[in-house]
Amino acid sequence: MNKTVLITGATSGIGKACAVRFAQGGYDIILTGRTKEKVSAAERDILSICPNIETFPLIFDVRDKEAAQKAVLSLPAKWSEIDVLINNAGLALGLDPEYGGDIDDWETMIDTNIKGLLYMTRLVVPAMVARGRGHIINIGSVAGDAAYANGNVYCATKAAVKSLTDGLRIDLAHTPLRVTNLKPGLVETNFSTTRFHGDKNRAEKVYNGIKPLSGADIADVAFYAASAPAHVQIAEVLILATHQASGSVIFREE
Ligand code: NDP
Ligand code: 8X3
Image 1: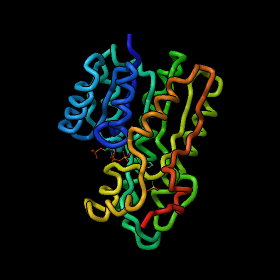
Image 2 (image 1 turned 90 degrees about the vertical axis):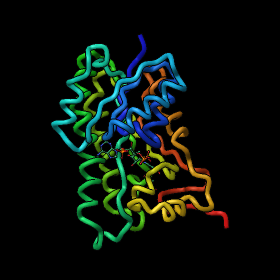
Image 3 (image 1 turned 180 degrees about the horizontal axis):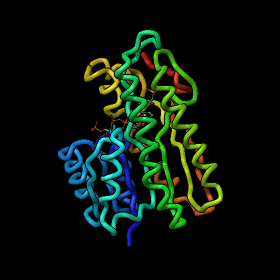
């Protein structure tokens, strides 16, 4: 029987790339997303690449505690033994000084990146503990290592992901479960278009003069962490483009 991975935000970018990579590695995939159309499209894409695995869609918003609970509890028996949880759904909104940012944007980032990750952890991990098997991979960020100009609340949410990942690893140290924080730098996805509220021109400039990472680069590391021998826990990985040195230091060719 194949192993099962549940990936939040599997419709795009890093989440979708993880779905493809784990499918290529023989996992069955629970894809979660907010819209049925996007999740169905992602399922079709994955099955066209890997026709021998199975997918299962869960449609809910990770900010909605009740919806998340209903979705996880609705999983049929075959799908309820989750081997790997990838807490990926997340976003940045805005790039403004902390004294001038949009409070609604702040709340959306906090509710998604921190509270959504916590809801999913609380819903999925107890059964992993009971089975004595499981791996939680959280998608943090270089932004969680140190704040950068105008990143304030987004950076704080990813610092929280670092802290919550460390906390979970400590609380599970007596179990065979493993906990990983992946901290990417610049990855070209829908991330910047979302951050700039749909302004694609501004989003493209984020990647000017530098070859950014791709979702597949991050998915490779996630799959490696999940495939390591049982006694090896990849606790944390910072993954940067070669010309990025930190959240603030990026060398761009003219
Ligand atoms: P994308 O915008 O391409 O993907 C984000 C995914 O998260 C989408 O599937 C989106 O679904 C989903 N999502 C957003 N909000 C919610 C929600 N409330 N409920 C459920 N799903 C939601 O961006 P990335 O792939 O780049 O981002 C994935 C993760 O990687 C995020 O946590 C991000 O912070 C992190 N990251 C990204 C980096 C980058 O440079 N790209 C670098 C470091 C970390 P929908 O289609 O419904 O919006
Ligand atoms: C996404 C990467 O550098 O834009 O977390 O914060 S960055």
